[in-house]
Image (cartoon, rainbow, N blue to C red; front, top):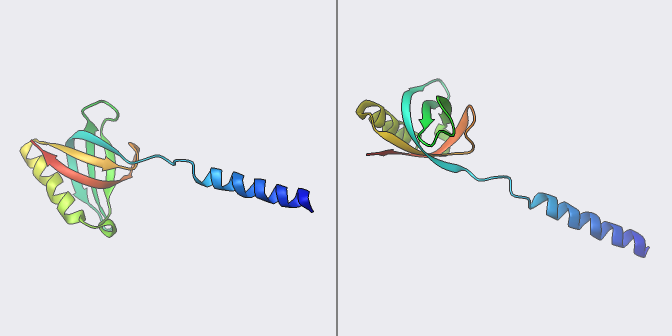
Length: 105
């Protein structure tokens, strides 16, 4: 009985350790924007990181996450003015979610 209880405690502890592993954080990038548009479900931007992490990568701005219209407006403003954008994305991979976008001078 004691062995079973000890085994259960170990299994539970290992489960907690596995669940508490950091899955990664969204990162911030300063980018130049080359395209901005929309489709039926969301807005998209195509940007290149000034730090060379990625080039011409497409990211998605989902309306369900709030402030999508404001982020899209900032992207269009930056595109029209030739300004850079400061973005926060899940990861620098195709179709990652944009959580924050601001136009920079």
